[in-house]
Image (cartoon, rainbow, N blue to C red; front, side):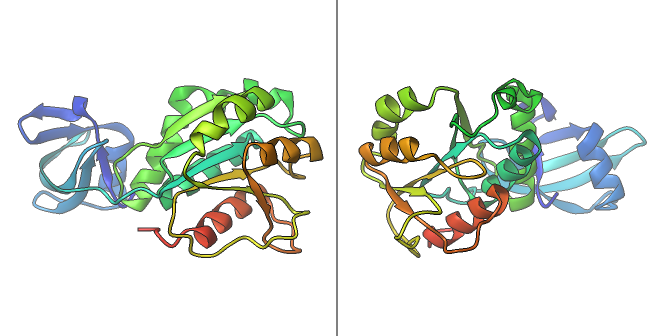
Length: 239
């Protein structure tokens, strides 16, 4: 936890917060903070700054916070990701949040198992927990948006062209002959398929929506590896 992420209901007065639970335990056991110590803090969806520890008890910690620093700029990249298996969803959401992705679409595909869509991982509160872990790691405060799209073709045909308008639209596909570009300085919409990739008809639909297929090479990577590799390769704007 490189940043203590704060919420409005943590405030017990002007510029004063009281923390319990997970964050309190982390401050006490990992940071081993004492009264008078200064920690990095940030208010969700607002500014970052410092927290002066003013009181520690067996149940809570109180801090005076000074929020005077803007959060890092998000990546100009929209991620369209075929829904991975639940355990992988957690890791990928945390990873792309760390990298600065602020808009994520989880979509269906032929190779996505139907049972994945009923996973508790997709409950809004559970997704937000993974986003928070990513923000705490990367020292950011702006929560990404996540959209669930369980119908592939209606989404790609009706919504995706609007989402990808005025961006470089790329679809990762192991059969592509075009290498994934490096250090793009323009906004990007990146579509990544499930394990095994998008099937041919899905690629055709993406092509018709304006997407070019690209590949990372001959090595076949797991989705949890391929996604951050693609993002870091494509963009030169990681802050």
